[in-house]
Image (tube, rainbow, N blue to C red; front, top):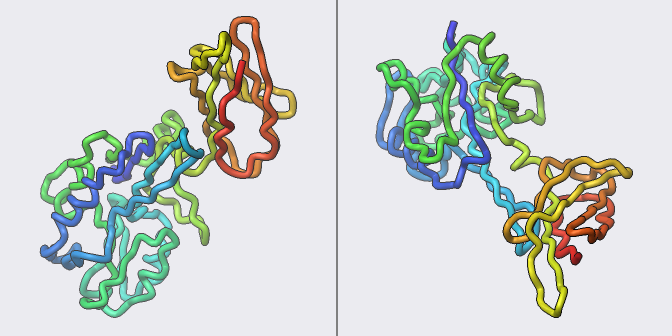
Length: 280
Protein backbone atom coordinates (compact mmCIF):
# COMPACT_ATOMS: atom_id res chain seq x y z
CA UNK A 1 0.00 0.00 0.00
CA UNK A 2 1.17 3.53 -0.74
CA UNK A 3 2.14 5.57 2.31
CA UNK A 4 2.92 9.25 2.86
CA UNK A 5 6.29 10.66 3.90
CA UNK A 6 7.72 14.16 4.13
CA UNK A 7 10.98 15.00 2.32
CA UNK A 8 12.78 18.13 3.53
CA UNK A 9 15.88 19.54 1.82
CA UNK A 10 17.81 21.54 4.43
CA UNK A 11 19.95 23.16 1.72
CA UNK A 12 16.86 24.73 0.11
CA UNK A 13 15.16 26.10 3.24
CA UNK A 14 15.53 29.90 3.55
CA UNK A 15 13.44 30.38 6.70
CA UNK A 16 10.68 32.24 4.85
CA UNK A 17 8.14 30.62 7.23
CA UNK A 18 5.54 30.21 4.48
CA UNK A 19 5.04 26.65 5.73
CA UNK A 20 4.39 27.86 9.27
CA UNK A 21 2.00 30.60 8.10
CA UNK A 22 0.05 28.30 5.78
CA UNK A 23 -0.41 25.87 8.66
CA UNK A 24 -1.78 28.69 10.80
CA UNK A 25 -4.05 29.79 7.97
CA UNK A 26 -5.45 26.29 7.58
CA UNK A 27 -5.90 25.40 11.24
CA UNK A 28 -6.36 28.59 13.28
CA UNK A 29 -10.08 29.28 13.74
CA UNK A 30 -10.97 26.09 11.88
CA UNK A 31 -12.13 22.86 13.49
CA UNK A 32 -11.73 19.81 11.30
CA UNK A 33 -13.98 17.17 12.93
CA UNK A 34 -12.25 13.83 13.23
CA UNK A 35 -8.85 15.35 12.42
CA UNK A 36 -8.09 18.27 14.75
CA UNK A 37 -9.55 21.09 16.79
CA UNK A 38 -8.64 24.66 15.93
CA UNK A 39 -4.96 25.46 16.50
CA UNK A 40 -4.33 28.32 18.96
CA UNK A 41 -3.15 31.51 17.28
CA UNK A 42 -0.11 31.71 19.57
CA UNK A 43 2.15 29.19 21.26
CA UNK A 44 2.04 26.27 18.84
CA UNK A 45 4.25 25.62 15.81
CA UNK A 46 3.12 22.47 14.03
CA UNK A 47 5.91 23.19 11.53
CA UNK A 48 8.73 24.33 13.80
CA UNK A 49 11.92 25.68 12.22
CA UNK A 50 15.20 25.38 14.11
CA UNK A 51 18.15 27.60 13.19
CA UNK A 52 21.90 27.04 13.44
CA UNK A 53 24.89 29.26 12.64
CA UNK A 54 28.21 27.66 11.69
CA UNK A 55 31.58 29.37 11.37
CA UNK A 56 32.50 32.84 12.57
CA UNK A 57 32.33 36.32 11.10
CA UNK A 58 32.90 37.12 8.28
CA UNK A 59 32.25 33.62 6.86
CA UNK A 60 28.98 32.42 8.36
CA UNK A 61 26.84 29.52 7.23
CA UNK A 62 23.23 29.53 8.49
CA UNK A 63 21.06 26.44 8.17
CA UNK A 64 17.35 25.98 8.86
CA UNK A 65 15.67 22.73 9.88
CA UNK A 66 11.86 22.48 9.48
CA UNK A 67 10.42 19.94 11.93
CA UNK A 68 6.82 18.77 11.65
CA UNK A 69 5.39 15.69 13.37
CA UNK A 70 7.57 12.76 12.27
CA UNK A 71 4.55 10.44 11.73
CA UNK A 72 6.66 7.62 13.17
CA UNK A 73 6.00 3.99 12.31
CA UNK A 74 6.73 3.16 15.96
CA UNK A 75 5.15 6.29 17.40
CA UNK A 76 5.56 6.68 21.19
CA UNK A 77 2.46 8.87 21.28
CA UNK A 78 0.36 5.95 20.04
CA UNK A 79 1.67 3.78 22.86
CA UNK A 80 1.10 6.51 25.46
CA UNK A 81 -2.51 7.17 24.47
CA UNK A 82 -5.53 5.56 26.08
CA UNK A 83 -8.62 4.40 24.24
CA UNK A 84 -6.79 4.53 20.87
CA UNK A 85 -6.82 8.33 21.07
CA UNK A 86 -3.76 8.41 18.82
CA UNK A 87 -3.62 6.08 15.84
CA UNK A 88 -1.61 5.46 12.71
CA UNK A 89 -3.56 5.23 9.47
CA UNK A 90 -2.69 2.60 6.85
CA UNK A 91 -1.33 5.43 4.66
CA UNK A 92 1.34 6.27 7.27
CA UNK A 93 -0.24 9.39 8.79
CA UNK A 94 -0.46 9.60 12.60
CA UNK A 95 -3.54 11.41 13.92
CA UNK A 96 -4.75 12.46 17.36
CA UNK A 97 -8.50 12.02 17.85
CA UNK A 98 -9.52 15.43 19.27
CA UNK A 99 -12.36 13.94 21.31
CA UNK A 100 -10.76 10.78 22.68
CA UNK A 101 -7.50 12.60 23.53
CA UNK A 102 -9.08 15.24 25.81
CA UNK A 103 -7.33 15.39 29.15
CA UNK A 104 -4.47 13.10 28.06
CA UNK A 105 -1.50 15.35 28.72
CA UNK A 106 0.82 12.34 28.68
CA UNK A 107 0.44 12.16 24.92
CA UNK A 108 2.26 15.47 24.47
CA UNK A 109 5.08 14.40 26.77
CA UNK A 110 5.59 11.12 24.94
CA UNK A 111 6.99 12.65 21.74
CA UNK A 112 10.81 12.58 21.75
CA UNK A 113 10.87 15.25 19.03
CA UNK A 114 8.73 17.78 20.89
CA UNK A 115 6.26 17.84 18.00
CA UNK A 116 3.08 17.53 20.08
CA UNK A 117 1.67 20.64 21.75
CA UNK A 118 -0.74 20.91 24.66
CA UNK A 119 -3.79 23.11 24.15
CA UNK A 120 -4.50 24.31 27.69
CA UNK A 121 -7.86 25.85 26.85
CA UNK A 122 -9.24 22.81 25.02
CA UNK A 123 -7.31 20.34 27.22
CA UNK A 124 -6.16 18.36 24.22
CA UNK A 125 -2.80 17.48 22.60
CA UNK A 126 -2.31 18.75 19.05
CA UNK A 127 0.18 18.41 16.20
CA UNK A 128 0.70 18.36 12.43
CA UNK A 129 -1.96 16.25 10.73
CA UNK A 130 -0.22 16.10 7.32
CA UNK A 131 -3.37 18.02 6.27
CA UNK A 132 -5.10 14.65 6.11
CA UNK A 133 -8.49 16.37 5.84
CA UNK A 134 -7.34 17.88 2.53
CA UNK A 135 -5.66 14.74 1.20
CA UNK A 136 -8.85 12.82 1.91
CA UNK A 137 -10.68 15.35 -0.28
CA UNK A 138 -8.30 14.80 -3.19
CA UNK A 139 -5.50 17.29 -2.53
CA UNK A 140 -2.11 16.08 -3.72
CA UNK A 141 0.01 17.80 -1.06
CA UNK A 142 -0.43 19.44 2.38
CA UNK A 143 -0.64 23.24 2.63
CA UNK A 144 2.97 23.63 3.77
CA UNK A 145 4.27 21.84 0.68
CA UNK A 146 1.93 23.79 -1.59
CA UNK A 147 3.33 27.16 -0.51
CA UNK A 148 7.06 26.36 -0.22
CA UNK A 149 8.74 28.68 -2.79
CA UNK A 150 12.12 26.92 -2.91
CA UNK A 151 11.04 23.28 -3.11
CA UNK A 152 12.52 22.55 0.32
CA UNK A 153 9.35 20.68 1.27
CA UNK A 154 7.88 17.81 -0.70
CA UNK A 155 6.10 14.54 -0.04
CA UNK A 156 6.29 10.98 -1.26
CA UNK A 157 3.26 8.76 -1.67
CA UNK A 158 4.73 5.38 -2.51
CA UNK A 159 5.05 1.88 -1.14
CA UNK A 160 7.71 1.17 1.47
CA UNK A 161 9.81 -0.87 -0.97
CA UNK A 162 10.12 2.08 -3.34
CA UNK A 163 10.75 4.46 -0.44
CA UNK A 164 13.70 2.37 0.77
CA UNK A 165 15.33 2.63 -2.65
CA UNK A 166 14.91 6.42 -2.77
CA UNK A 167 16.29 6.86 0.73
CA UNK A 168 19.47 5.11 -0.37
CA UNK A 169 19.82 6.58 -3.87
CA UNK A 170 19.13 10.18 -2.77
CA UNK A 171 21.14 9.93 0.47
CA UNK A 172 18.24 10.85 2.74
CA UNK A 173 18.37 10.65 6.54
CA UNK A 174 16.00 10.81 9.48
CA UNK A 175 16.44 12.72 12.72
CA UNK A 176 17.73 10.55 15.52
CA UNK A 177 15.50 10.22 18.54
CA UNK A 178 17.25 10.78 21.86
CA UNK A 179 14.95 8.42 23.73
CA UNK A 180 14.12 5.52 21.42
CA UNK A 181 14.06 4.36 17.80
CA UNK A 182 10.74 5.54 16.35
CA UNK A 183 11.19 4.98 12.58
CA UNK A 184 10.09 8.50 11.53
CA UNK A 185 8.57 9.12 8.12
CA UNK A 186 10.19 12.54 7.67
CA UNK A 187 13.32 12.26 5.54
CA UNK A 188 15.97 14.94 5.21
CA UNK A 189 18.35 15.78 2.40
CA UNK A 190 21.59 17.65 3.15
CA UNK A 191 21.13 17.16 6.89
CA UNK A 192 24.87 17.73 7.30
CA UNK A 193 24.14 21.44 6.79
CA UNK A 194 22.60 21.38 10.26
CA UNK A 195 24.27 18.68 12.33
CA UNK A 196 27.87 18.70 11.05
CA UNK A 197 30.82 21.13 11.32
CA UNK A 198 32.51 23.28 8.70
CA UNK A 199 36.02 24.61 8.25
CA UNK A 200 36.01 27.87 6.28
CA UNK A 201 38.64 30.40 5.32
CA UNK A 202 40.12 32.54 2.56
CA UNK A 203 43.24 32.47 0.38
CA UNK A 204 45.01 35.76 -0.44
CA UNK A 205 48.31 37.09 -1.71
CA UNK A 206 50.13 40.22 -0.68
CA UNK A 207 52.65 40.53 -3.53
CA UNK A 208 53.76 44.01 -4.59
CA UNK A 209 52.20 45.56 -1.50
CA UNK A 210 48.66 44.90 -2.71
CA UNK A 211 46.28 42.39 -1.15
CA UNK A 212 44.35 40.26 -3.61
CA UNK A 213 42.10 37.26 -3.13
CA UNK A 214 43.38 34.15 -4.86
CA UNK A 215 40.91 32.50 -7.21
CA UNK A 216 41.40 28.84 -8.08
CA UNK A 217 43.91 27.93 -5.39
CA UNK A 218 43.94 24.23 -4.56
CA UNK A 219 42.95 23.71 -0.93
CA UNK A 220 43.34 20.30 0.67
CA UNK A 221 41.98 19.18 4.02
CA UNK A 222 44.21 16.61 5.70
CA UNK A 223 43.89 14.39 8.74
CA UNK A 224 46.73 12.16 9.95
CA UNK A 225 48.61 13.04 6.77
CA UNK A 226 45.83 11.80 4.48
CA UNK A 227 43.77 14.01 2.16
CA UNK A 228 40.10 13.95 3.18
CA UNK A 229 38.85 16.49 0.64
CA UNK A 230 40.11 18.90 -2.00
CA UNK A 231 38.60 21.96 -3.66
CA UNK A 232 39.45 25.26 -5.32
CA UNK A 233 38.99 28.68 -3.75
CA UNK A 234 36.05 30.58 -5.26
CA UNK A 235 35.88 34.02 -6.92
CA UNK A 236 36.33 35.65 -3.50
CA UNK A 237 39.21 33.40 -2.50
CA UNK A 238 36.96 31.54 -0.03
CA UNK A 239 36.71 27.82 0.66
CA UNK A 240 34.49 25.62 2.84
CA UNK A 241 34.82 22.01 3.93
CA UNK A 242 31.51 20.60 5.17
CA UNK A 243 30.25 17.42 6.81
CA UNK A 244 32.83 17.26 9.61
CA UNK A 245 32.04 15.79 13.01
CA UNK A 246 32.53 17.79 16.20
CA UNK A 247 35.46 16.67 18.38
CA UNK A 248 36.72 14.43 15.57
CA UNK A 249 40.44 15.03 16.00
CA UNK A 250 43.09 17.32 14.49
CA UNK A 251 43.19 18.64 10.93
CA UNK A 252 45.57 20.47 8.60
CA UNK A 253 45.08 22.65 5.55
CA UNK A 254 47.42 22.75 2.58
CA UNK A 255 47.10 25.46 -0.07
CA UNK A 256 48.95 25.58 -3.38
CA UNK A 257 48.80 28.07 -6.26
CA UNK A 258 51.23 28.96 -9.06
CA UNK A 259 54.10 26.94 -7.60
CA UNK A 260 53.56 28.46 -4.15
CA UNK A 261 52.23 26.58 -1.16
CA UNK A 262 51.49 26.99 2.53
CA UNK A 263 50.17 24.81 5.36
CA UNK A 264 48.16 25.48 8.48
CA UNK A 265 47.63 23.25 11.49
CA UNK A 266 44.08 23.61 12.75
CA UNK A 267 44.43 21.38 15.77
CA UNK A 268 41.51 19.61 17.39
CA UNK A 269 38.16 20.47 15.85
CA UNK A 270 35.71 21.17 18.68
CA UNK A 271 33.12 22.98 16.55
CA UNK A 272 32.85 24.86 13.25
CA UNK A 273 35.92 27.01 12.57
CA UNK A 274 36.77 30.09 10.56
CA UNK A 275 40.54 29.80 10.12
CA UNK A 276 41.06 33.30 8.74
CA UNK A 277 43.19 34.12 5.71
CA UNK A 278 45.88 31.81 4.40
CA UNK A 279 48.58 33.96 2.73
CA UNK A 280 50.39 32.55 -0.26
